[in-house]
Image (cartoon, rainbow, N blue to C red):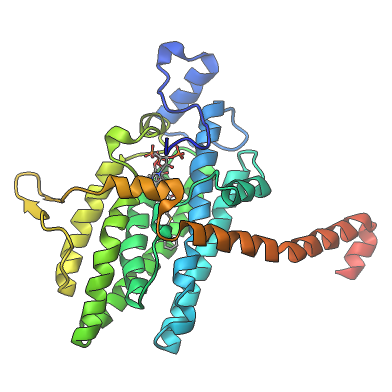
Length: 334
Ligand code: FAQ
């Protein structure tokens, strides 16, 4: 089973008749759109679902730095390099806000990191694909950050206060990321034939994995029903995926690029683009650890964690030394 490596007990929706008094009051608060805060009572499964989702989200931001990090030293100009570096640093910041939001639920950052490094916690499937050319920096910003915004704007209104508030700033930064990606694509598409073909090749490789980012089809999304009842999810996986297609196809047309989907067409009656079949077997293989870069990504995170041990130890020793000092000495030293 590809899902539920982190057991939350939230794959079936509890009916009101099965709820005790505390659960009924909790659900009534959610239904009135009152935010849940860390010290409020909450069902254990709500807490675990949030820890699962927020930590997966945090891990995605951290692992998500790796594909773009691959191009920092090969950016085509000083300006492009500075922009890419700033974007990657933003992703690190998002990871930190998200780990902090997860910590408000009573889990430690060390536990979350361990779950990632042990392969128990997931991160987004998209970051298991390789970045083969500079155009991939454009495609990631345009499509991957574009998908992230579509998914995360509704999260600004989700029921858990710390997660919703963290998302506000994250979304503002993701908007800059999306625009810088589109800007790279525009430059390539206005350039030579060779540059434009790099952009087309990047779109060909990132299009389908970007659509997979929204998760399995609604019928196979085990967590959706309960997460929707708890207002963690305000839209379904398929609804957000459709929004991505509707938003992106005209952008591709503007760039003069072709979406790699022969079945793609606009449907007048629904007012939406109809897209072809997604290869869900590929998605499930990536989730099982068999994507093109799964092993490489986890190995890079494990190495980074190992290499950073001396620094964490030094910080802990420094903090312990200061905590042991009487407060007047501490003030004099600082
Ligand atoms: N990859 O029942 P559902 C970014 C798993 S941030 C891997 O539908 P749910 C910024 C899912 O966990 C990108 N696993 O699950 C950036 C579950 O397994 P579990 C990350 C996936 O949670 C840009 C199982 O499949 N964003 O890109 C994926 O209700 C550029 C069944 O699925 C977030 O995390 C997937 N794509 O809905 C950074 C946003 N999809 O846990 C650097 C917050 C599903 O039961 C560079 N997360 N699975 O073992 C969410 O909105 C939700 O968690 C969904 C999945 C919509 C992703």
